[in-house]
Amino acid sequence: MRSTSMITTTAEARASRGLLLALLALAMAFGCEAQTQVASGFDDPPPAATVGGEGGDVAAMVAAGEAGWANRDEESGLRAAIEGFAGAVASDPNQPDAWVMLARSHYLLADCHLAFDETKTEEKLSEYEAGKVAAERSLRFAFPEFAQRIADGSPWQEALGANLLDASAVPALYWRASAMGKWASAEFATLLSYKDEIKAIMQTCLDLDGDYFYSGPSRYFGVFYGRAPAFAGGDLDQSRSFFETSLAEAPNYLGTRVLMAQDYAVKAQDRALFEQQLQTVIDADPEAGGAEIAPENRCEQRKAADLLSRADELFE
Image 1: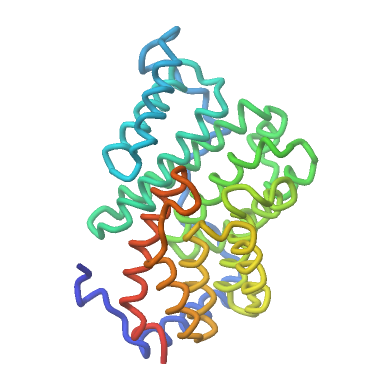
Image 2 (image 1 turned 45 degrees about the vertical axis):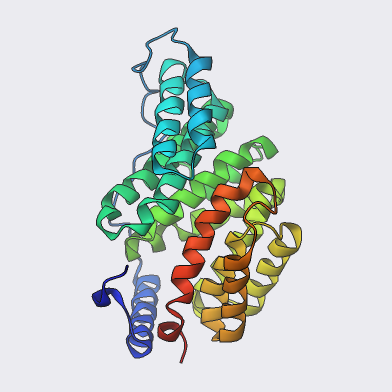
């Protein structure tokens, strides 16, 4: 249950948004560097074999990770997945797919378990950061020329434009950007510093494989255009269009509806749409899109119930 001290009134929310816009305007006018440094999966040396040792049973470790992942409804399942995949890549780092699964496991632990406990904010952010680094490790081993450019200091936007990646890079790119966005959101200056980089990565995902993770790239742009103020590229028409594209392509992934309610309907002050989308999520069969998406959908149902309970705070 949320503490009453965490509840924000509509008037307070408007005041906070006004202050945020003012800060964003100043930052854009005068420049703003990230206030927090994040670990990199590109310029650190590859991890030494620490779990299982060199020549350890990598297949068994991957199998243990997959078994934990299958139980990701439970926090203990994701922690087991992390242990298994981390052991595999520690024994043999040249495993891009295992690095991606490690990134996803860190991300989901943060987003669908730790995020519901306000006392675990620091751990949540650490998991997002670990997910980002794991995704970068995947790119490092799968696309060494691209990774070297990043390690040498090339901006992401420039490296992405060098056409060194193909569609097989999308999983690592997608989870890197997703984890980075959640990690950076904890601090205004940091988020501002990385927003163009994250947008460029998601544009690459959209170009190479727009269907990935239930039309995830279109979902991201729905969030981006809904969340950003108009002078920073926000556009409610674009936001709704991207959300509708994502829903049309993957209607059974419930996270799209939650984000459309949160980042489009609230901004547009469309309470009817907000309530309709969230109630649809709450009433949905989480396995309608298949058992493989059910754990994520059950997580989104928890988010929807929490968000719907705050409707009076969010609408005038």
